[in-house]
Image: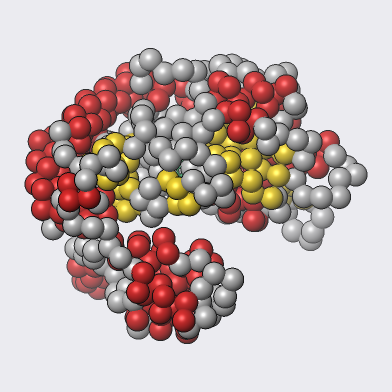
Length: 491
Ligand SMILES: Cc1ncc(COP(=O)(O)O)c(C=O)c1O
């Protein structure tokens, strides 16, 4: 490496020093550390070997097709799909969800050639935001089904929404915000009876729940499940950029689904194009890394890592049960839990989860703020803190549960952040319900007014979250978009 190259790398190392730690289980969202350094080395080596390839054309680079075959084969055994289950490797959970929706829309259009209205996508309100994005991009109406305050959805409420315009119903295994397993066994067969495809979003739990004991069936064993997404870059322990989308169902349904997912054209002046996924040219490195890790871990490796997550989940739940004023939301299974204030306790005894999250940052732990969400029927899912539990956390579990207890003691009785005055000021400026949506400049001024224009990995977020809860969604979305956009504006 030339000294110039070394200087550049040094600069990157200095930049990286401000990042939240990706290893050691201290960040309980975004990153999925197996705790096995060997896996990282293997992923790096495999990614490097595949670096120069272009995933655009596996006929020119057959190693890509070979790795895809192995990954899809592994995933379909894991998700209990038979030989008729087929699939693709994508760049991540969002792309897998987008393609599941695009597939369903193509099949719905083929079935309803004379339809004038838009097709509908039915999902519990806890389904990942990627499905809202998919509905927007592929022109479907998004129809979220309200959940109970603990995040659980009644299958009857979902089934009641079924109709000829429904192109897809989505359930999660589990839902990210709560860790709850949706009622796949009740929803998918009812959808099948009406000819509606059912996607199980196992982006989060797909590489954990197959080894989690005593769960109701939620995978391809359930009649009516037509596609499943599962992310290698989450609990598959691969670096970012790799997920799978599988299509199954009766007879040729899986193959027809996959065909509807593809884009192909010979109608231009260049090479014939067949894109299985959204991108054209694509890196093969994430695939190679995911392939190497799944080959290396195999069934038994994932089973062991899942056992570590289960022990961690038991310890965290036991610890929360022992904390006055704090409770686990609903009855989660798998690697995520959400904690909320115990509404049955007197106010002076409650532990506000966002105050807790802010207090934990000072102790070197990062759990994720989730704003409260009022659904279309008025039922509110309370604001919470999300914890993604990884195998790496097991080594530090005593320190973490200790920090959870002392940080709870510190904030117990402190009321939730109050953004009423700020929200009222914004209303007075015309940014209230039914009012204006700020443009880029106004959004920036409002952010500064709210004291939220500076962000860092360890900034307290309770006030910003309270503001998001109080502002009309389009206003909050404009503020957050501006906040993120400004981060990458050249200085
Ligand atoms: C259930 C679920 N679906 C979809 C996604 C989107 O995945 P990605 O962030 O990889 O695009 C996530 C991410 O957390 C998720 O938990």
